[in-house]
Amino acid sequence: MANEPSLNPNSETRSFARVPAYRRILDELRSRIEKGELKPGDRIESERVLAARCGVSLMTARHAINELEREGLVNRRIGAGTFVAAPKIHFNRLLSFSELMGSREVVAHTRFVGAHLIEDDFEAAARLGLPPGTAMVKLERIRYGGNEPYAFETSYLASDEFPDIARKVRARDSLFETLQRDYGMSPAYADEEVDATSAEGRVAEYLQVARGHSVLRIRQVVFAANGRRILYDVGVYRSDRHSLMIRRFR
Image 1 (cartoon, one colour):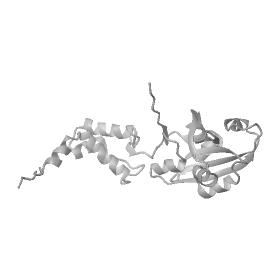
Image 2 (cartoon, rainbow, N blue to C red):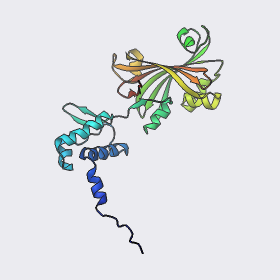
Image 3 (cartoon, helix red, strand yellow):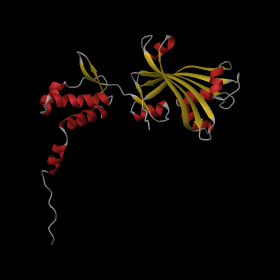
Image 4 (cartoon, rainbow, N blue to C red):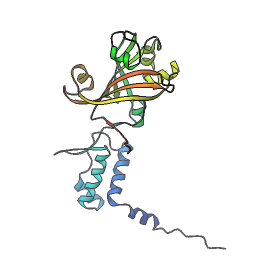
């Protein structure tokens, strides 16, 4: 009988040893954050304590923490330490707010501020390719991740194309899902304009930030697959909870 290959009991240890020391620390802390063992706001071990516990140099421990900070998983606070960061939402796909939050395993919910029938917003009508004076539904909502406000969104839709949409969105809590299930309109792509602005007045109050606080504003026209404009949305997002992911080609 041919000899069967034997397993080297030290192979796993040797493979583990080939992983850079900073990577082992990085993977351990990332795993604890992703599993919820370390929660947003929790303080993690200092670089000096990590270095002593893991038997590595202070520079190696610092490298691991730098990588966690680059990934947006922790925040350094001068004089206080390093803390687990609240989840950030990355805008790199056309997803509803509920889907974005779900991708980060954060429970999303909505507070309706208002639902109005309007005819005098000429910019919104133009964005939707509608004649001036066209009746539109205007929805104003505060979007929450957990108990924290993440965004204030104002959405515009043609009222004759989407009758009773305010009530249906309230019931389902997702505008994209409502468009798809109740009106047969699946958002396919969007044209977006992104700029930085300041939170003022009621927007600052809704987002629980100081007046003048920097926020991210995204103006978005959403299209169905056939090119039909179905939604114009103006979202104001807390800059400390969102980032915009862009891939550029040359």
